[in-house]
Image (tube, rainbow, N blue to C red; front, side, top):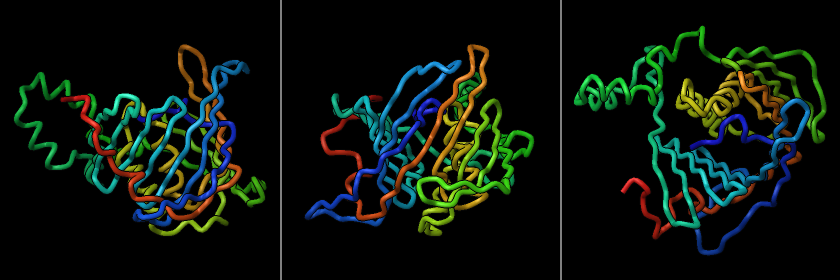
Length: 257
C-alpha cells in the first residue's frame, strides 16, 4: 500500500546521481527521505526512504526494505518485497475528467458482478463524485516568501478532508513540462483513494501552482489524536537513472497467485 501522510519527513538528504554501465538510462531526479512523526510534540517514529523519479515513473525504496513502484504510464502500482522476491500489483487508473465516472473498462467489468460484489468492490475504487469541487483539495497560494536550502520559495496553504498542509514551493529548479505532467496524472489517480490522501494533496497542489515543494508541514486530524509530519528537502539531484529501477525484477512472483 502506498505510504500515507505518515510517510513523509523531517529532512531529505540527497544521494548523488547514479550511473550503471551497460543499462539504459534516462534523465530523472534522485533524492533521499527522512521522516519524523510527532504526536503532542513527542517523536513517534523516524523513517528513511530513497526516491527515484523520471517522467511518469517513481520508485520509492523504504527503510524496511520494501519498494513501491508508481507506473502511471501503465496505470499500475506495485509493492515489492525484495526479501521474499514477491510483489503485489494494483490498478492506478484516473477518473474520467469532468464526469465523475469510472473508466469504461472498469464499468464494463463491474457490470459482470452481482450487486453485492459490485458494492463491495466500489469501496476501493474512485468515487463517482470525485470531481465535485466540495471534496477536492483547497489550495491558497500566499504572498509570503522564504528561502529554503538556498532557493526562494512561495508559501502555499492546502487542505483536503482532515489533512492540513503548508508547502514551500520553489520555481528555481529545472522542473520540465514532462515532470510537471506527473503531478497532474498522479492527482487524477489518487483523488478520493483511501490511504493516498497525502499523495493526492501533494500532487494536486503542484499541478495547480507548478514548481516543486522543498518543504512541507502536514497535520492529520483524527479522533485518536493529531499527527504532525515535517517534510524538508536539502537538495535535488538531476541525472541519469537506470531504466531497470522502474521494472519488476526478474524472478519475482505475484503475492496474489
